[in-house]
Length: 376
Image (cartoon, rainbow, N blue to C red; front, side, top):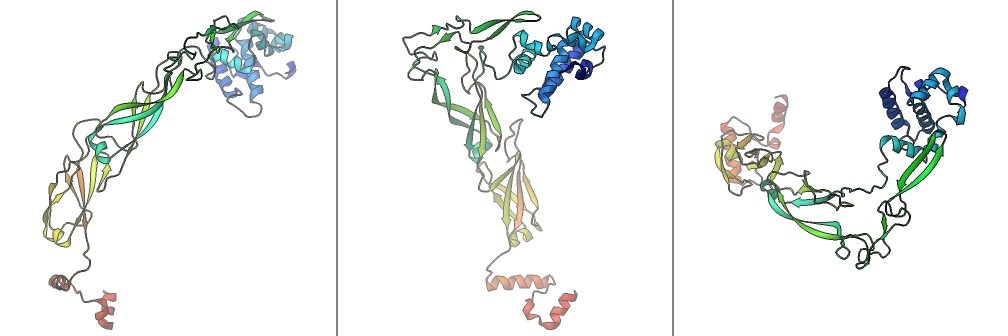
């Protein structure tokens, strides 16, 4: 970037000329995150990222900032400016600059303990099992320590050897010289991947991985009141961690089968109750099924209409977070009779006539009767 084409470093970072060190750092972090090539694939993003790095490199150093404030870009013209000067610090490229400032890349291997991966498993429950809870046996397959080498990865009877590249430290150091002085670049040893040792005779059973896939059976207590689609977490029952790290978690996804007659609405149960004309007209005392298995008496008052609801208190689903249970909500459904006998039809006609209704079939009313019906 030629000196006469460079933008003012304060404008590049979007800060005032009296910006504090903290202001500069915040501006740099924001812009570096925005234009980093790993995050922004738009044309020109990498060039802007270099420009932001160059501006911050100068303005974050009190001595360089003072020189820049006095002489502008002419103060940094030597050595092709400070952007290329990053390579002299022992950084291999833009990714290493980003890692050094923000504390390392998430994809870089680490020597310390790491938590194991989480495991997900679908568990299918019957409707009443979800309502009342159950102790369920769940089988999962996870990577466990190899029983032959106990996770050491080496064939029993052999020992890992000290890595000759890093002499067992797990790190390699490289001294580099730059225009600002001498710097030491510390990196993970590529040969042993930071472990400080190498396996010369891998375990035959696990092929040197130290683990093998095995099935485990767990007893899981499903609480009363769980519902379809909910998730349960079992801490520490997932995959093994690495380098002594803790296990991940096991997440159980609950799949509840539908019931033959009941439907669920949160903590309430819904039931469709079919009733005859006689029952809703005269009233009746009926028994309705419950999820507990014991019928419950329910009085149907005379004049009940289709769609009316009746509530049976405390016969719903136990509340998962709280005390008590929901209700059983019964929906009345008046059934229209089919295939009536002649006697039944005659009785219904008499009933209709007593109520002032004309139940003569349409086809038997004649021409004038149809006109009368049409005119109301």
